[in-house]
Image (cartoon, rainbow, N blue to C red):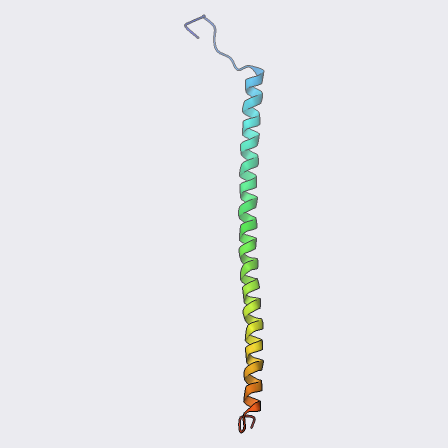
Length: 78
């Protein structure tokens, strides 16, 4: 009981509605954070794949260039 006026404190409907909205907003932000973490992980995997592809293409180009140099030099294409 509240000693000041002799009544027990109670929750009013607007306060309950605000508290519920705050809980919903907290859940939405938690879900959004989880989605962002998942997107960041997917972007990191894509980045690794992209660099692997770039290195593979550069390797093929260098191998072809090296092969053409070997065939162009005298005695190299035996």
